[in-house]
Length: 190
Image (cartoon, rainbow, N blue to C red; front, side):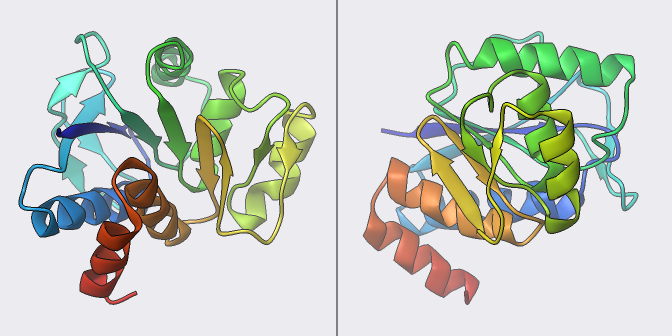
């Protein structure tokens, strides 16, 4: 059975927060014969998304499309934004929590999860430079320091950037098995 992995793309996101997990799941799927995971890039619309480093991504679908995901990954980026796109994505993420079995964040993507109320009463982490801000803005979150990723059941968060690859390997193990996660890590040379 193919598992559907959605990766959110939004303006000024950190490219590695998106690309690290994307490549991890793509590699795992290739090792498993090509059908373990199906990857879909989701945007606020289907318009091109310019990442913080200037790279442009073209979403496969928009948040208006009907999706059946097994896992949703939210990359980090400009979490201080208070624009219409952020409000739309936060509301969409909150709605997805009713349907998607696992929602994960990389780096400051945790701020989207916290804004959606998904981290209240849960252990969570983020980039080391944003831990205090997460703690101050969202006191209902049990902020964990010095961890590459934190698995709180349906919600999984990771520390900064490359920790998202470690978290994605953990998710490969959860969604498939340890052997596939190990083979993927070896192929990625981790």
